[in-house]
Length: 372
Image (cartoon, rainbow, N blue to C red; front, top):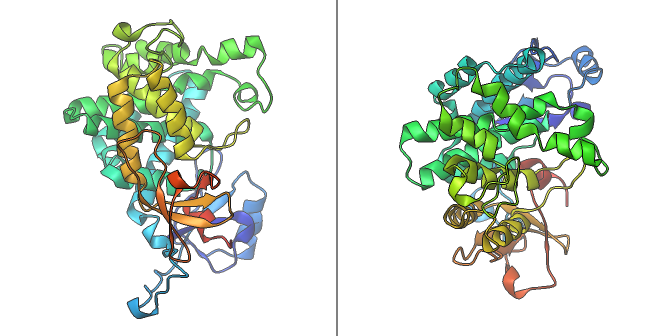
């Protein structure tokens, strides 16, 4: 199995489970390399924060030895090694793609097309597992890369849930993958600014959808209207309150309406320099409010929340009491429903009936294996 370690926690003798790349995308240390102290020291001098390490699969505990006081599962039940490998392969392809786009001002759609044709993206959009995996993995590296891949995955899931033909789903995934490419033309100092943006900076950030559209419309996607409209319109809102054109529902392409939901969900579920991540149930509250007030598509929004609720069963939470709990049931007939959880002492708690107990975080695999 693979386990992610912070650079400062590496030890000589550990075996690298996934290639470690330099800033120019060349391989520094290959998979299967046994780390030495010299190699570890060299990594400490680079902007690399974590490494995947090969570890032996832990032996599952015998059923007779399981106790109610320890219901935290082994890590292999949280992270699917094949899924992680596939995700990291896509991440590295996207890193190279975006790096070249920054230098040339153009997106190499041949790379995107090859990714789509390879089946890797479709594999990442494999049902409920996809939601659990993207929440359980640690986001290490550029936020925009993880966000782009996550939005593509969530969009692909929506396409599947809506019964879209495979060819249409593939286009929706590609649109999600490049929906934020316009941000490559905006300074990282502005994108990662911790404080409030000035009116000028905000106007520039809000241009990213148009900038991305302009980067793509004259290239290999010039005849792919669906993909281009997803990129251009993912910040439009059905009531006309969105941007860049302030369009209302009849004029917003369905790709734009789907990506609006996936983009909002993932953006709020991730830690950023200027905002702490929200747990999914906080995000559902925001999405529900936008649905009720006519800003988001009702059909797509309700379906998204219901399906994500299903996918979160089995995930782990941290509660305001300091305890950890596993989601065992969510009433998906109510968009604002909170889960029923099992605490680590084996007892159950319906958070809908416990207003004093709040969800403080959805725990990823690394957070779950840390000491309470």
